[in-house]
Length: 376
Image (tube, rainbow, N blue to C red; front, side, top):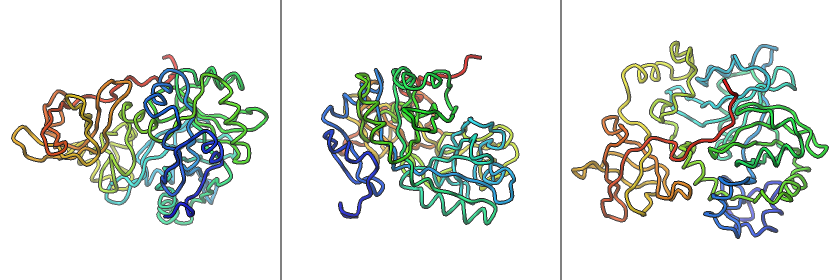
């Protein structure tokens, strides 16, 4: 795709004006970094509040055609407990194919309005495929309405609450994985307390024609900086969060990807979803390979595609995500290894530039996740 063919988000002019280094990403022209630089952008988000343009992601409403619960219908393709969601509650889930492989991961929220609707956010590179799968597999039982007239802004970091609550005090009372309608600067927005950095924060769905002014209003706060794709990737990696198409693909099951938390407790007993037989068998008997966290020794990061070897030099897997963790203070990575090598503390070798570098299987997240959860 040529530069002229790339799509732009409603914040494109702001990115360029702010010195964003624009690169092609999922068919869009997106900022990989700003003059602050990836390292400082990453650390700023961990310390204060980062503003991310995620308007390239797919936003859509899903409804049933007969007035029944659309969550019950889409549960056929997703293993999470979705039908139990109350209005304003959300879940992370995965879209499965018939073989139990992950086509994409996504967020599902039960809306207040429109009544009887679900609000879904899918990855930018997969949105057309995801929409097609949902419509083809679920026949005429659902309608899917892409929200092309909305932007999506993520505000992430320990200062996110104070920044956003200055505009709408009620957001301070929200907990992780809750969503509601909020009026911000006179604009009605759909706000969720969620994100993909491991930090507390919000994702804000705002009308596209109001997005630029709203983002600039947030940036008036000294605690807020624009953050690009580079830091977004290092933040989610430190948090041990998967990147669709990298840390799993359509052949990978949720058990292999080590995201069993996406399986509803009762549903993992019944297996009433696409690929259920495979996934239940893997839960019962284990898998041949599994995603793990891996910390390389020394300072050389292991990038995606790096071979993983055992102590005898046999290649046993590959790194799927890797780089330097600015908050962790050292390289971190994730990859797939045989189940026999998946225990924390297992010593491995990473083949970096033709040389074996020692590494250790390590629990994720690499840095603590700091979501604001309800006190029990």
